[in-house]
Length: 84
Image (tube, rainbow, N blue to C red):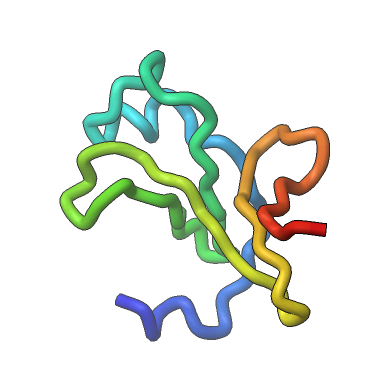
């Protein structure tokens, strides 16, 4: 299920709701803010700590200039892992 994402657009980035966390079997009070990308067709994409879905994870990325970052909801500024 990766070809289905091609051509889709991210229309919202937000925290998972308590209901969404519970639907995955993740205890909402135990986990902090878990990022979710909402696509234009309503599909939700969110991180898992492993392929079995044993809890939420974090999303990391890199830009074309080689900078590295972590996606955080409600962070005061982007979190960068680059030195300098």
